[in-house]
Amino acid sequence: MKKIFLCSYFAGVVEQFKTFIQTSNVKTNKVLFIPTAGNVEEYTGYIDEGREALTNLHYKIDELNIDKEDTEYVANKISAADMIYISGGNTFYLLQELKRKNLLPLLINKINSGIPYIGESAGAIILAPSIEYNKIMDDIQIAPDLKDYTGLNITDFYTLPHFIEPPFTDSVQETFKTYKDQLNLIAINNSQAIIVNGDNYKVK
Image (tube, rainbow, N blue to C red; front, top):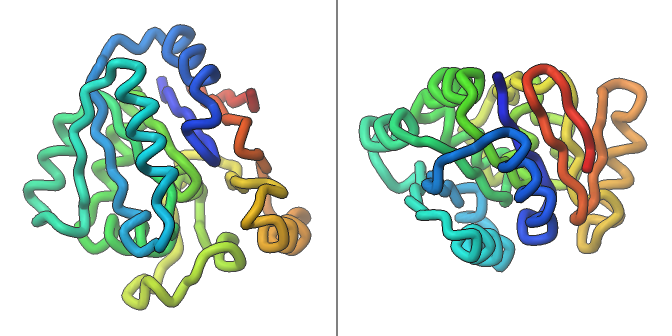
């Protein structure tokens, strides 16, 4: 059964995460922490805060930058992971690097098998059927080799993070207005999380 925790800003939803861990009966204290989406961003304080929040919860963090390691190394790390955390940053760059190393089938299999998955912002968006809707919020040109915007297709909804939160106030509202009648958008602010158990989800 899928155990998925999606958010805009992990440091802002630690209490919801604690509840998720308890209700989902998650026993592991190890997390594979993937900050790759932030490697092309100027500001990455949210990654530091997410890492700190996990450390304060006594998780052992194994950090993995998928764009800086070879395919075999990265695949082995993901295969062995008991919990996976993918941070925020540029969604298109993240998907480009995942696809460059053919990691989508492996990630899909791990998540569907029931290992806990934490997706923050970009890490949440990639679970949708496609990430193209996020082109208003993220710079698509940072990922010039990404030609196919198909996501992991784990969720049948499209996470819209940072809803009316600066500095995304204008771009997130434009995204919502553009796609609200086309896609099943689930908009969350920085204090909300989407918890997926199996085929059911709730916003907390």
